Length: 374
Image 1 (tube, rainbow, N blue to C red):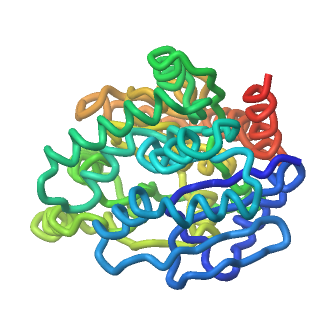
Image 2: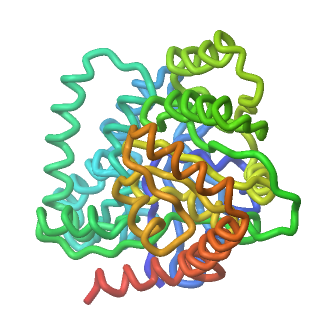
Image 3: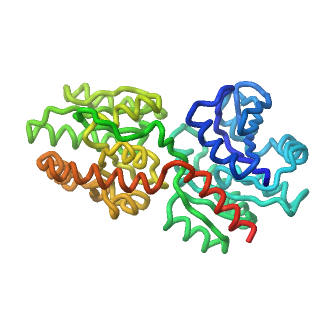
C-alpha cells in the first residue's frame, strides 16, 4: 500500500468525529493515510484508520499561515522520512510549496498532488482581515505558479476549471466532489417549511443580496415563511451590516441561527423547502450535495460550479448573478407550484446520490492514484 499524506490546516481534534472517521475508513481501504496539520497542541495521534501529526498553531492567524506554509520544512522532511511517504496531497497551491521544495531537494520520486477546491486566495483575503492585501496577492500568485508547474497531478472538484488549470500547466488531472457524509445527510419524511441559507457570513456569499430580495419578495407576495440563516460570522463588518439591515427594516421572517453541527444542518435541510445561494464564486459547493441528499432543492447563481452540474442536471433553479428580478421570479415560480417543487426534490436527490455515497470518495481517490502512476 502507498503511504499518502494530506497536508493542510484542517484541525480534526483529538477524537475524530463519526463523519471524519468514516472518510478515513474509506481511504484506508486503498492507502496508509497520514495527515499533517495544525492543532491546539503538538502531538502525533494514531487512529485506527489514519495517523495525524499536529503542529501547535501560533495564536496570530497570520503567524499560523507563515509557520505552516513556509517554516515547517524540517518537520515535514522528518515526517516523510520516518513514515516513507510516497504521495503528498496539498490542500491548495500555497500548501504545496514545502512539499514541492522537499521533492526538488530530497526525493524526486515522491508524488505531489495540488488540490483545487475553489479560489483559495479569494477565500483567504475576503474571509479575514489582512493588511497589505495587494502584496499578499502578488506573492501568493507567484508561489502558485511555482507549485503548479512543479507538481505531478492536479485534483479538482469541478470539471471546467480543473481542465483549464491542468491544460495551463500541462498536468494530468482528476476531479470529484469533496467528502460528504451520506450517513448524516439523507432524505427524511419531515414536514417542510421555511427557506435556508447555509454558509459563512461573508461578502462572497451574497447574504445581504438574499436578505434584501427575500424581504422584497415576502412583502410583495404577503409571504410569511421564514428565511433561516445558518453560518459562522467570519467578517464582523459584513455580518453587522446584514444584522443592521434586518433590524432597521423590522424584518420579522429572517432569523440568524449561527453555526450548527452537521446533524443539525441535516435536520434543517430535510425540514426546509428550499436552499438559497447568492455566491459570486464557488468550486463545487458541498452544501448543494448535502442539500440534494436531503431531497431539498435549491436556488443559485449562474456561476461555474453551480450552473454546471446542478442547474443542468436538475434540482437547482438558476438566476443571473446579482439579478434581483430573476431571483424573485424563480422564487415565485417555486412557491406557486407544488408539483414543480416535488419534481425538483426528486432531481436534487437523484443527482446528489450519483455524486456521493458509500465508498465513492475512497474509490475516487484510488482512481486518482492509479492515474498518477500510469
